[in-house]
Image 1: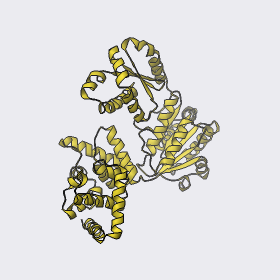
Image 2: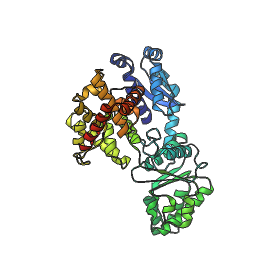
Image 3: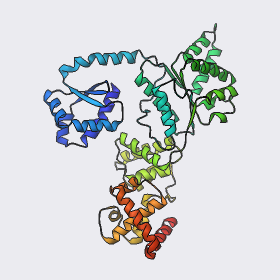
Length: 448
């Protein structure tokens, strides 16, 4: 039960952060996940005393961590080895279902709805995909998803497949690239003997509950395949089978397609995934870093998110490169200079980048104050004013979320950030000195 172990490993990480090392080693270290049944994670403890102690003293901690997972698991049960036979039938049933599964393609287990970061650029596509996965063939059929390279189209298609299989392991699903569909059609013609290959092609793509075709734009110039897809589409649609298609363009822009195919593709729901905004890119990095068990400071996350704004694939690649570089060098990814060195082949590190660090550095230089003092807890009048001006400038020049600013300044809450911002904003209108300081620091930032 690979999924069961993966969920338990994530839970253990959260639990270990909330209890002492001694308690963890004594009560949790030797627990083993067994299975998931009726949305409940079954865990085996060697001793009944361990079972009783955990349920008595740590149940709330475990349930809180389960809630954070945001998966279908909503509870847990600890059993002892002598109780395992009670749950063995369920394990055998799951294995039997997995062995008899008729799905023709496997989906990447990392591409799930839980791992998909939702933002303004993809929230409609995400909602539509979840609806389709919950009730395939009844809502939004066909579902047509379009957007540029590396923005998450393939992830969301795999997420649909994973969710459907989770709800119905016997569902027949084909997920393939359009190139594979084309190649299968060509083979059905080239190797046709008494129409046997052609019959196999029709059965493969029509005897399914869900058909998912990725990158439909590669049908350009393939008239015969378009004809085959048209009839496949009609057959599936007639029997209320779900069709999901992805492309780099809206159906009306696929001018190389036959008009009747364009019409079919547009007959359901068409949704787009656009470039992720800064906040979404930050959230993606935070989530990916969490699952990789890497602690990245907010200024490092912001730096990477600012530099890689074209697509998610490049963003994740940059994160992976930083992690590998730091592991190789034996250093922590907590310094912008280290990050610049790790990504020197991918970005122009000599160019100026407007960031939290650059604004705070300019403010510190202007007031001749150490950076640690500005982002720290000291309450000397000069330091407090410099800190508030830096907060105001970050909000004014970058517009990042208040929570992000608060995290950067030592974990301050959003009310503190709002107070600092509003205070300096008012002073800038009435106090000529503060207005001049803000203007001077902005000039310093621009010249750097």
